[in-house]
Image (cartoon, rainbow, N blue to C red; front, top):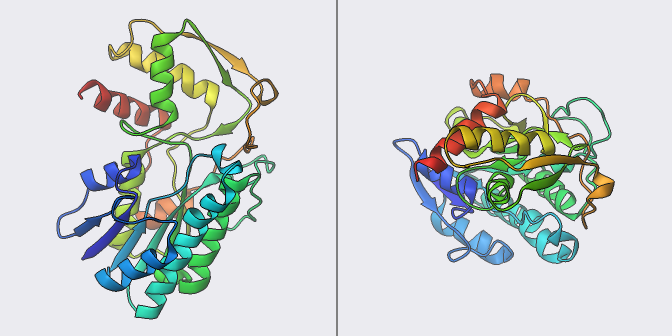
Amino acid sequence: MRVLLTGAGGQLGYALQASCPQGVELIATDLAQLDLSDPAACRRIVHELRPDWLLNGGAYTAVDQAEQQPELAEAVNAGAPRAFAEALADLGSGRLLQISTDFVFSGQQGHPYGPQDPVAPLGVYGATKARGEAAVLELLGPERACVLRTSWLYGPVGKNFCLTMLRLHRERPELGVVADQVGCPTHTAGLAAACWAVIAKGVGGLQQWSDAGAASWYDFAVAIGEEAQALGLLERQAQVKPLTTAEYPTPAQRPAYSLMDCRASREALGLAPLHWRQGLRQVLAAIASQ
């Protein structure tokens, strides 16, 4: 089986390459090999390689910066998935796994979002990802396309909240972290396993995957300090102060509640999630062993 991967240099790409199953010919591309803002290049690589699956893990993920660069975010997050789907539709073969985000939701529902709940993104990032979702499902249908939403992704490499908090715990005696935004941290190894299960089982349509449980960013920051100190990654933890969203304004508005109902996807994929705190221990153990 030939799988074309985009975003190979990112944190999910790293995890996908590390866990690639036997029998898969993985063609891993990053910006150097494929510019996702170039739709012609996206269509061309599909026609040249004719993959059995295209796993689109690349994205414009700078949530705040997207507010200043909406055209680039649109090209990468919506234009590239559409170009990939168009090329696969032209070929008449191959399937597409599109990674998406909890930021397609408004955060105003107050209970976990199901896959079919209406999307209502609050900012450019979420809106462009929602348009990417719609494009691949419109062009390929659930028979040949799977959209896999995830939330609060982090791992032992790349740029993410966990690595930033580790650094800040070392550098500062006190941190302020938002406590009124709730979701679920998801470690990259768990999402990578879900991606490979989608491909192995041929799962399609709208799917959702996160670790189990719920947390605020404040909860996550406190746990990072506690678990990192227990593993010897920190000599001491910073004191973490809870903030409101109003006390920590950002260019992009974020959903206050973006927990997703992943039960149907877990059943379809045949996978049981880890609680997010167990996933955190795994990530920090990987960092400690580097």
